[in-house]
Image (cartoon, rainbow, N blue to C red; front, top):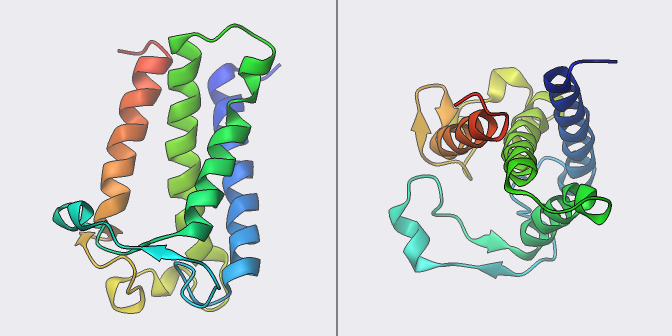
Length: 152
């Protein structure tokens, strides 16, 4: 049997790839649901947070809520506990961030060469080679991962 950390990363990678490929089929070349018939909500309080100035779309709310709901499934078969919840939440942050990156990697309209600020209007703030939003998610993911797996 594979070690638990390897199973965690394999699960997150496969989930991210599948969600990225699905989202490419839905959005095509137009990221952040630009051409989809979905509602958009602009929340002023998010404007002060780098990377979160774009409107929230109904499509993305439902997409991310569905993923969150699905990965809570273990609690249908076991008692809830904080340790497991932190591992699940870390997987959620890892999957959503990796999925977004893989959207660019696999999307024939972008690819890794176009993973740059000048090609991606919906990620306006960058920290070096990555969108600032990625940095926040990575920090949250690592923190939840380390606490959840009892590393810190």
